[in-house]
Each structure stands twice: as structure tokens, then as C-alpha cells.
Image 1 (cartoon, rainbow, N blue to C red):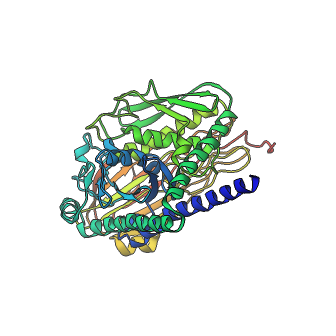
Image 2 (tube, rainbow, N blue to C red; image 1 turned 90 degrees about the vertical axis):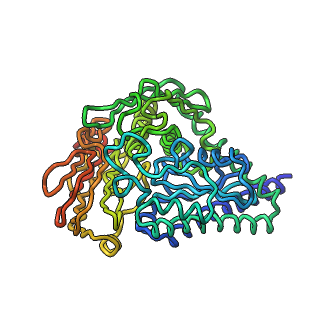
Length: 502
């Protein structure tokens, strides 16, 4: 009997590795086949596999804010009863999307569904890049795509409403290739192992992840723990409040008391809020647990409808996906910090920069300093937390766009002092070579990332145009020769400066 149990465990490990490798290969195909620098170079995309019930079973280690919200997208497609050869497309944040540039494709496989999500450099709207600083309604941010069956006519009709339609079409075809690869690989796996065994393995992988996370939660102290933080808007601050309740092997995160949805675009659909919560729970419980929907099962997220973190349509969400999700992660970390030790705060922003006109659209996020830990300094100049992308290489950027990189360096000394120092941010200067529009969506410009255990805060970020300071969120014209400089925040320090590590 013991020998048979060992054989079953080995078989499960083999099948689990096979499913994860399919998800990773999907990501590799999407990245290598894409046209835009944002996907090809920055890898702003995610891939995952789901079972017949729409539960995530395996994912590539891509973008947390994408992956945590993907189950909602698959659920929206399942509700339309897709056939075996159907391909669905969507980006509607109120139907499982995140924000409009993130376009998702969902298709059937032999044992469930495959999904790809990629941030497209433009999806229409008045502003190039489809991330305007001043949008108030969702339809001001680009083409809204509810779950729709995708065929050639639909593909042509959608891309015709976006800038650089050939590039958009190329990136969508890369997603199509990744979805089709998943179907082919799962058919091959079922042919080798049998469909019933593969389906049974997906069930057990989901249960295994749930067991591990429940065991890790059970090690945490029971109780209710509260925290708050703020987002920066022109007229002041918007408060986020989180209450963490740990009860045995389950936990609940309740955002009651959070500010009502905003007239601007800092609003989050609930799927994005859940993503940030799941990310923090995985980081602080058992980060080596195989990434599947089972890891989310012991976590309940509640948020008042009509609040900043559970907005109602047609509220704008462009910055909610990138900036509010980062602050949701921060405030959930702070709530956990009332129960267990956590790192100091990191930069808490993605520093979104868009430059473009009718001819080109360039978008990227900029890394920064992360918070120090109880036993180590914080890393510098990294994209982590809800982003997890790369920087656009200078050579690729200058080859593809009328932009010159004047400077890209560490912002030395921006990390907070402490027994362990926070990581340093980045200074990045971009010179526009033709007339275009600039949009910046950023945070932590007034409120610095805080230290922990008497560690000092990191330096807040700054946005400048030709040396003139710009607001945290801004859209404006750029003349040829103008220089945009982004100084990303440093991470907070940990522990009292000057004291030796314990």
C-alpha cells in the first residue's frame, strides 16, 4: 500500500509539472511571437490553465494583478457556454477584466480552459496608450470588449478602432497562438496519460494547494487586525481601510470604511482587489505552494459595492488596476503586520509612463526601491508586487520609437536608512523626438514609503518635464526635444539605524 501511495504521489508530481510547463510554454510563445515592445521586451502578459469548473490549476509566474483576476474572466466566458472550437475575447473590467489595455483570450481545452492576458500598447480612447490621467468614465479609456466570440471579422473590427492596428493584430495573433498551443499540448498529455487521470490530477493539484495554504494560515495568530493607507489625488487623499480576521485555517479581508468610488480613474473592480489580496496572502503564508486556485480558497474578500475597491460601472479604472492595486497590497501587508513581522514598505507604485501620437504608442512601468526585511536590505530598481514586469531595454526602445533614453540609473540614497536599508529607486530620463502626448499615472509622490520597526522612510517619487515638477497624475503635450524625468520612490528601512542586526 505504501509503495502504491508513493507511486501516486510521483505521478501527481509529474502531471503537475507537465501542466505548469504548458502554462510556461504558452507564455514563451506569446512573448516571442508578439510585435509590441510592451509584451515582447517588458513581458507585460500572463498565461494560465483552468479546469472544467473554471478554477485555476496552473499558471506561469507572470503578473500578479493579471493572474488573480483571470478566474473572473473565465467565469464570464463559461456563462456563455463556449463550444470546443470557440475563442473568446474580453477586456471589460466589470466582466473579469482589469483595465482596458489588458485584453484576455479564453478558449476550451481537453480538460478545461486556457487563458492569456496581455497589456496592449493602445486600445483606442482620445489619449494615445489608453491610460489617460483624467478619465472619468470607462468608455473614455478605450474600446470596451464584453466577452465576445472571436473570429477574423471581429478581430478586424476591434483593431480598426485602435491605434497601430497592424501591431494590435500581431499581438492578438500571438495570444491566439498561445491559446492554441495549450489546446494542442493538453490533447497530447491526455493521449499519453488518459483524460480521466489528467482531470483527476487537476482536482488533486487544486486540493493540494488549498491544504498547504490552510496549514500555513493555521500557524498565524487568530484575531482581528486593522490598517489604513491613502491614495494621492489632486484634491487630497483617498483612504483605504482593511480589516484582517484570522480564524483557524481561514482568513477574511474586509474593506469597509474605504473611500467611495472616485470621480477619476483610481477605481478597482473587485477582481483586481482580490488579486492584490491573494498576492499578499501567498507571500506571507506559503510562497512555495504551487500557484493554483486552491491557494485562494481559504481567503474571503469583502468590499462595499460602490467603493474605491469594488467600483460600479461605468466608473473609470485605468489607474485602479496599476496604482490602487499596489495600495491595496500595501494596506493588506500593514494589516498582517499587526499580527506578524513584515518588511518595510516598497515603492507602492508602478510609475506608469505613456508617450504617443497617432503614429506610435510607448508604455512602460518603472521599477523602484523595495522595503528592507528583518534580515536583509531591500532590493533596488525592481518591478515587484503587483507588476513583476521588466524594463524596456534602451536599444529596443530607441529602435522602435522616436524617443531617446538620456539617463537610466539608480537614484542613490533614496532608500530609507535602518539596521537594514531600503532599496534605491530609479532615475529615468526620456527625450521625445517628435510631437506627442505624455500621460503619467504614479503614486507615493506626497506620501513616502514607510520604514518598519523605527526604520526611516524611503524618498518619495518625483515627475519632471524639462526640470519642472509635474503632478503624480498628468496628461499633456510634449514638444520635440522635451525631457521627461521619472524618479521612482525608494523603499523604507527596517530597524533603528546604527544598531547591529540581531
